[in-house]
Length: 393
Figure (cartoon, rainbow, N blue to C red):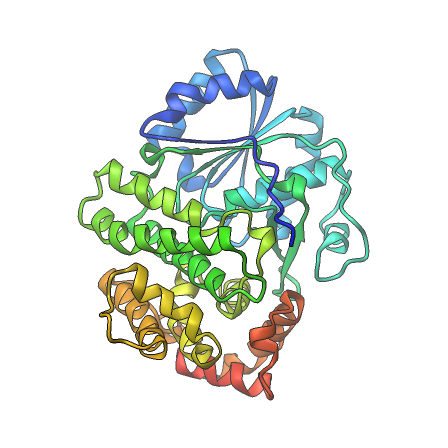
């Protein structure tokens, strides 16, 4: 067995840690011309403005570009010529999974001299026509404002507006070199986004437990992630100014997706990728919609794995069998979603039943790419996926 660590230099975490240590990291990485990748909603937040002013007052040149949800390819490549002329030597992303993913893709686009959106997709895992090299890549510092945990991975997705398919890209050097977990940057995150991305982190942890390629490090961390998220997410909702509770949620998100190259995530993620790309549903919401249904669907194949969930949450008694423990796991996650008052049905997002059948084809492509044995052993996968989507309707 081999365990692959991602090339992250350091994770820096704590209240107001960006204000205290970001400039030191920028100087350590010799940042003189910084590409800031964020979203329009982040631009006016107090924490972001303070960070930007601090960088500018230190004589650092900045170029700002904004991404959108699910990283549309045309938006991603819109400023690429101006960015090349600016010639950044450091990237800082600030926001949720979309700007972080956009920064990863831009680091590869700049390193491999990709010039157009059309040529970008040739490097995707879906197509595989060209290999990503990234020999002279630009280092990336990430400051997340949600709990999606994109900052801890070497993968990113881009949505093609033509075929509505989400294309996956992966390379170890796409991993951010430095991550700052600072709850002060999350205070102005909309509640629905904070809470729903927390469920996305729960989804990471659950699907890590029944990954077809398990290992003791990720399993142990996923269990601790579930414990933190299960108890601190409701507290952060009830007490939005409680920075300590928010930091515990951030740490839970980190533990949920640690060196993810060592595992394969599952069916909830595969369906969620395509729900997001086709219907513009945020990924946290897709997890709220699909995860309990997927857990129930896979239950008979994953009793041992799912039994660990109520155990770590302290929801079992000594007389319960493994099967009995596992059987209550989907309900515990469903109850958490309902307690947090997150929309969790496809019809909550104006998806019609007639739109489900075309969606299945893209979901099947995603599943085949993940090569998840727990899912692929299904006899009639198309029919089962259709039934799952019907159950989530």
